Length: 230
Image (cartoon, rainbow, N blue to C red; front, side):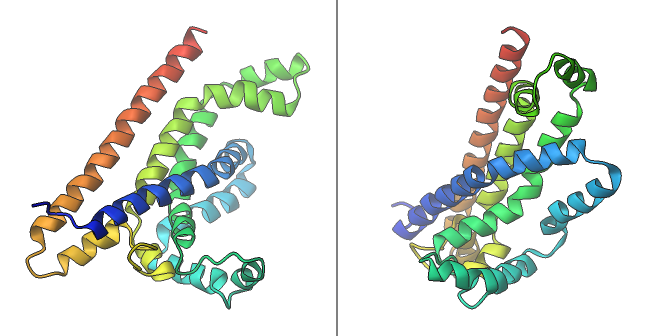
């Protein structure tokens, strides 16, 4: 007899969907933010880095509440979206938004470090050859920082997959709609005799996370190999 219920499998599938959506949607913004941080001057960099890091230092429940205030049906942003037929609060799309917000700082950091590690002379040489900004960004910065971008994607996915506090505050735990894997684990710990189910869910979560890291390592090595031996 399986330790996991149909509701648990739904939660696992939803968590994968939420984490993947969060990472894909915020990836362009994370790359641009990392690039801005790697190139900005000290004062602007401090302000931007503080804003990026804020979800990490705030309690996740506080972040979830702020999302509810802003993106709820009565919130300033949520009400505008509702008129357009887009509802985030207590929907799986809201869970993706909460996961994206919490994962964003972890995505940006390795990307920024990879971009900062690129020798300035590389960009300067391309500039002297007349390469415009977009060409230098897509043909130099992105390929050279690719391992850092891959690391950021994996860290963001892992964080989005394990996000709990902001998600449950913003969208609740509605089975089949917003009940994610971390919430299912929490509910299992609160159920009498749920130790075996809790352990099974934790093993599933760990397996997914380890798989993502291994895939990232393989992708990163392939990118480095291709960069060194075009």
